[in-house]
Length: 387
Image (cartoon, one colour):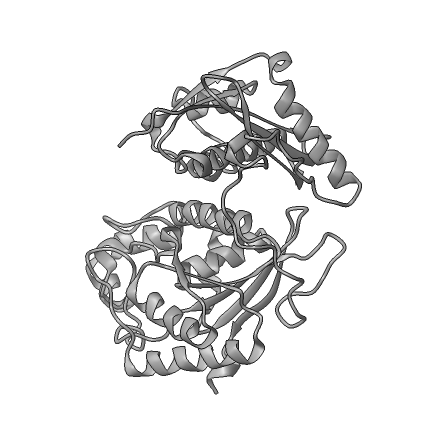
């Protein structure tokens, strides 16, 4: 049954320097009574005003969703850009905005959300929260929510998306403390071999092909699981929805006693008509299309997906993980293209760098993400656990 509730979200973000030290604030109110139900704010490090505004919108939507995912939502912001882009009236041209807009649009079904511009003078609450978050960041700490009046959100405390409890600092080996606090660490594990792997056939996420691990692939997954059990640092396991990754993740989860959470954005690229073929076969059957694909990351295989498109959805998946598991060590079980994409993004390398990385089956890589928005590649293509 559809909910009869209606929420008003007031959201804002700011940057002292544009770009510069940035933060966001968001408030959720009852649409009928105006009662304050939830607040959210965060210092996000070095960013632009627009990025901070989008992050405020996402936080407000998530806080509202945690209270009632069936409610109607009226978003009010003083950012004309965000309101017009999210309403679909303006195109989103900047590449940094597209994954943020996609993430915001995924919280609620489109038909449940409306957007309305309001003058800055009427957005004082969210603006104050954003400035509190930036002040906290300047002082070297994160913004801390104050208790809401009794009865607000049904509990007297701030209502936010349900997250796992805060984790202690991760042990040295995968993560190490820094001046900016404990980083979030994504440990990237490529799945084990399938029957297609040794033949070097294109194996993506399209055309109904979803191969399982071979005997060798299952053994590789077991060895990776043993390595993670010995280190004892993984706290969360997230996997691509494809079978080969789910099997690899399950081997680790069984050893560690953890659940596997599925993230659609981590699936392999769709290689279209290249699927199931070797490079030589593609070169023989689709020479023009192959040259175009190799010539630009913006070009997709026929009926497939470009690396630029993959990069956008992987960035959304990454940002979701960083928001959900701050300061934690997350095992991400995925594929060649998403793992290389995360590495490329962390290094700020061009799209063409994807063609210059080798990633072995069941290889481990690791990236740490800090509160100021910087990332550090700690490990790449480690296969020592397989020897």
